[in-house]
Image 1 (cartoon, rainbow, N blue to C red):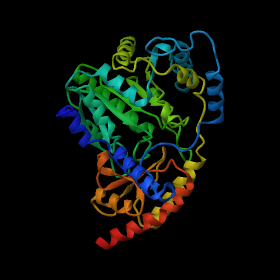
Image 2 (spheres, rainbow, N blue to C red; image 1 turned 45 degrees about the vertical axis):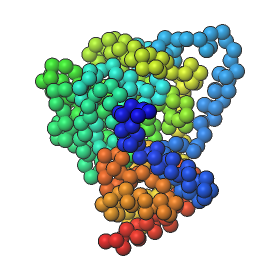
Image 3 (cartoon, rainbow, N blue to C red; image 1 turned 180 degrees about the vertical axis):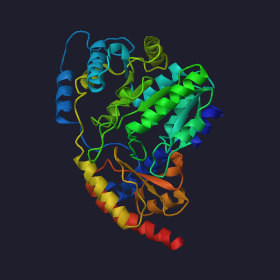
Image 4 (spheres, rainbow, N blue to C red; image 1 turned 135 degrees about the horizontal axis):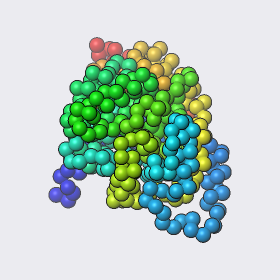
Length: 396
């Protein structure tokens, strides 16, 4: 055995997203990029906003002494102050640099949060459909995962969350706008979850934290607003990144924000700062910390995403697919025309249309389409979607 048994097992169960993406890369080499319609990975094809690119060039040419030296593990104080000022403006709460930790993306942020808050055997409640890496993040820190199912519109069901919470629950992890469904959780629902956690925390004799994973927060449609969780729960912690809202996925830059009124806020901050260091992240990259600090008010251009959403929703519905149109993000989580979503994804692949089966997100019988691509790809893929649906209908 050349590698650990545990990692070998994880490799077998590894993310469907990456698996399908890798298959797509092979097909593109064989058939050509223009013949493959790849909707597997949430990897925006758009470039960063002009303001971002301009500031990056300026920073790269800045030769001020100390620009590339070590820094506090929580991140550059002046950048954390900039992020905190934005959070304070949005929430009306007294955020300061001591409530913000700059991280290596949202994935780094979530690992830091779990490491700092969970003892081995503690439990994290997640909602299905879920981002598949949550399972691995929890395992990294010997935490267990409890899954609560959402309803047919992918909205949280309070009773299901309550059933999943037990004496070892430490975190309830929500992702809104959601990957893979695009669902946005309304303020009333988050308030109900917050009240539930208040009661369960009192019963357990220790806090249960409401952790929000929010990299798609600024990506919404039709005037849908994402509630500010800090206004709704004083036990809230946010993990986010600028991968999607600034089109910087390869830079892996994000942050943790801790509610100023959270129990033991200073201790929570210190624990996460330590976790950031000992997990090997140490601190987020200095150049991109300086870049995003001043970009907190920049909003993404949703024009292409909105166009792609319309092309696919209209086209798929015309082909007979059952769809809940996404309110945010750039994913459609469509119902598979046959119960076996893995088989159906293979039927799509035969038409050179690459998607990800719902089984990889904890909700079989569906498949995910990531439409952060050029609109031409969405248009050209519609015949393949229609042909696969027709084949599936013939199987019935």
